[in-house]
Length: 522
Image 1 (cartoon, one colour):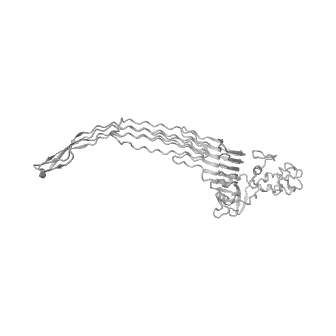
Image 2 (cartoon, helix red, strand yellow; image 1 turned 30 degrees about the vertical axis):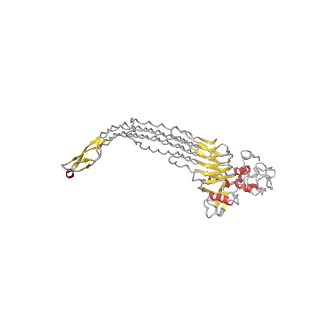
Image 3 (cartoon, one colour; image 1 turned 135 degrees about the horizontal axis):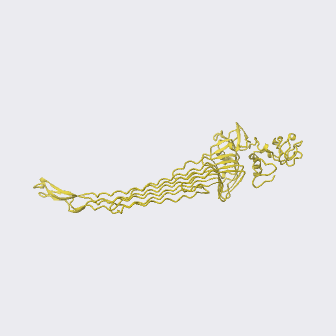
């Protein structure tokens, strides 16, 4: 049977998926589900008693082309020849559809993992399996590479593969009954072993060569709400990156969760009042200008680091108002300091007479500007398979890759109102002391008194001008939805794989919506 570049082999009948993959990729027979169909004699399988067992026999005149059928007495005629009396096994014949999966094809040397296992008590054997894939990967690092066999069930973990896991093979679809393990040969097998990541990345393959995933489903959680001042979270079902990374996905379903909505930017604190000199720093009391609005957000972009959301921009604060007009001057006079002295028999006034003035009126403080509105942040992406890095290669056969909705961009907030200017204040009054005067003939016995009067402060200055309103912040762009994203330098080959995407997230206000497609190759 000829092998074609798309990974499928052609003949008069379509080969079963697992068998085809085994031949096309050269993987070990248990990974294809047909370990005994490839033995040296071709007679290890019992499918020769089925009507379709000799479908691809080499000759067929005497039944020699049957892939199996050690007891050819019961072998029905294959599509290419008559039934033979001896049923000798063919040297290179493939089994028919009835023998595509052997329930007993379980690798003898593997790391076994089951939801009912134990990471602390298990040793990774059939009898004492591990509980998590992470524990099996640790065993590979410590004790050497073996296939990882997963019993059907749900594995609530995110899987991370690194260069130390080169050649790792992870296969689901095994049934565990006590200490007995068998293959599940049902056509819906991949949906019964589920890696359900509690994060927004299901499986991360970083610099891992020769990684193989088979007969399982990978799901991420949906992104959560973004925090204040943060872009929406992005979800990646399977992310392959890094120098030397090479992976195969066979009969694997990948479902990425929805991208998260963008968060609202943090509000800017209002500026503090600025009013240090209300006598010499006065002006005309005019209002400050309104701050301009921010520019509209542009679409986000993919890079080797993943999706960078298209965030909006914060609005510009308004301008300060101007201080009010200068106040009037206070009254003035020649005044003595307080205190009298009685050198008998007269009184004397302490100190020298000096010019004194009351305080001038103060101008009104300028109004503080309104803060700029907060930026709305962009939505996160939903990507089923994300592949980045020069020379990185991924092959997907017989799978399904699905992306959910991209996250919506958040609206920017309006700018804040400018504050009103302050009122002018009356100048402070001052007391002016006069000369000391005797209260009687002799100040030693009768005492002295000191009169005076009040100097009036200046009239109030004019009110300050109001601060300008802040400009509005702009909203974020929507996040994308793509089943497959391949960056320049990487290669992805898809054979018999279903792709599905949802909607890109809506952009806020005038910001663009997220893109959406089955494939995006940049």
